[in-house]
Image (cartoon, rainbow, N blue to C red; front, side, top):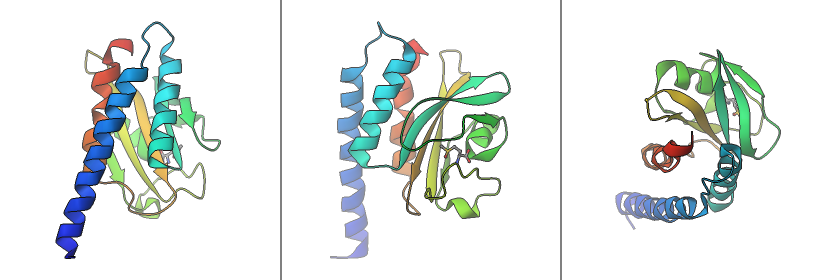
Length: 162
Ligand code: SME
């Protein structure tokens, strides 16, 4: 099989996986419970579905991101605006895909096993960043534009509860 064809099959598979997970997320959301509860379940769904190393949310509080609902090993609890991948995503108001964390200046290694990372800002109805969704994988090159596009869609599902 040609590499091009293989890549395109891979991409279709991944997009389909996302279609399923986004619909699963929609189904488990319960707007009668605290946001933390829903973010915890979203983290759990994502982690088990994709077998990622770490998935979680940081909440914007003042000039810091504070660890919120997550699944995976113990993580840094407080990240200053502009610091690390998460703080940079917040400061620069954009998603960041990091193919190799060793090549990202200022990356914060909460766990040495994490090798690649994707960070997605979560905005409220006013367009303000209120959470950062952070995902780590224990091998390089785990995330791409398909992950970026689809993980960003989670924002639409939770915008009414953040
Ligand atoms: N690596 C992140 C820190 C958070 S952990 O990965 C859970 C960063 O550089 O902002």
